[in-house]
Image 1: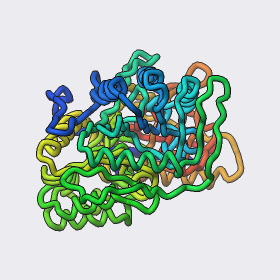
Image 2: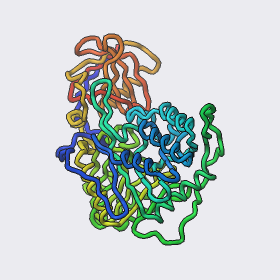
Image 3: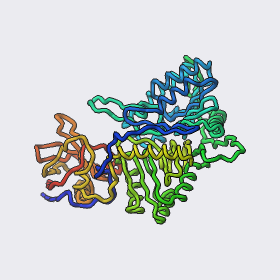
Image 4: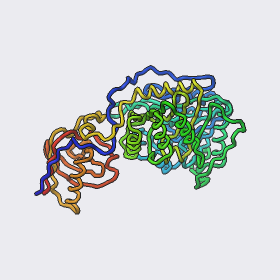
Length: 509
C-alpha cells in the first residue's frame, strides 16, 4: 500500500493572486462628484449613486424624446421612470438592450459574473416585457455592451453602470451580509456637438444596424429578428473637428476607445491609471506593448480591478506584472465595475468598455468620453483616488502557498486547519496516474477547499489548478477520496478558503 508525505505550504506558486493589501487607505475617504461648465461627473459607491438619480432626473425632464441604451435593465425605478416618460411624451422613448440569453452569456464573459452581481437575464426580460406592454419600442444588437442616455439632443449620460440594482445600491443578502454596490462611474454632458454625435450613433443603430426588436403591444410579446449579421455602424459625423471633449466608441472596424487609450499612453510622461472590471487577453495585445514602452520611459502604471480569481483575469495580471515589474501596481476590490483611464493628470477617459481584447477594445459596441478639460480630469482623478482607497487587495506574483493562505481575503473560517490524511481506497480506471498527477500538483500548486456539503456537511472538495478531489470526512483528521477529476476549469471554481501550511499524508490502497 503506497504512502506519500507532502509538506504543503513552502512551494512558490507559478502565477499570481489577489491577496490582502499591506496598507489600505480608509474607504470612507471624503468624496464629492466634480463638475464643470458643461459636464457633471457621476458615480456609484456604497450608500450612494448619483448615476441613478441623474438618469431618473433626465427622464423626468425629457420634453421630446429619449434614447436609452443599457446592456441589462432590471432596476424597478429606472423601468418605472421609462414608463412614466413614454406616457408623458405619448411615445418617443426608444430602448436598445439585450434580447437573447446567448448574447448575455457572450458579453457577460462568464457565467458566474451574473450570479455574483445578481444580474438575472430572466428578470431583465420581465422588465423589458413591462416596457413593451406600456408602449416602448425595444431593439437589440448582439454585441451591444454600451450604457448611455440621450435626452432631446440636449444632453447625454455615458456610464459604466448597467440599469441593475447592484450598480446603484447596496443589496442585503439572505445570509445577513450586505453586498455593497459596484463602484461605477459616468458623466452627464451638455456639449451640443458631442451630444449630437452620440445621438446620431444611436439613430443609426436604431434605423438599420440592429438584430432583434420587440414592438409595443400590451398582449403580443414576440422577439422578432431583423438581421442575423453584425452590421457596421456608419453614423453621420459632423464636419467640425472635435475639440478637447470627445465622445468615442468601439464598433465593428471602428476602435476609437482603443486608439484613444493608445494615444494617451504614448503621451504619458509620469503616470497611467486604468480602472476596469476585468483585464483579459492582454498578452500580445497592442495595449500591453504600449504599457511596456511607457515603463521604459519611466512611467508608473497602476491598474484598479475587481479582485477576481478567474483564470484569464489572473493570467493577464501576471503577464503585466512579469513584463512591467516594479513599475506596475495592480490593486483590487470585491465589486469594482467602473472603467476609466487617467494620464499625467492631463487627460482622462471613462467608458463602458473593459480592458478586454475580445469584448471592449477590439469588438462589441461600447461608448466613452475623453477630455483634456482640467475640471473633468480632476473629477476623474478624485474618483480614482476614492476607488483606490477602497482597494483592499493587491495582485501578488509567485507567492508561496502559505503566504497565499495567510493573506487570502475570506469571511469564512478554515474547514481544514491541521495536518490530515487522504485515503484513496476506491479503484477506478487510471487511478494511479491521477494520484501521481495529484502529488505533483499538491507540491507546486495552490490547494483550495470548498464549503462543507452533503449529509451532515461531511463532503467537501480540494481544488488545484487542474484537478478536483471530491472527499468525505472520515474523522477530524482524515478524508476519504471519492473521486479525482481532471478539469481545466478547476482554478475558477468557488472555494471557501486556501489551505494553509500543513502536512498531508496520502494512503493508496
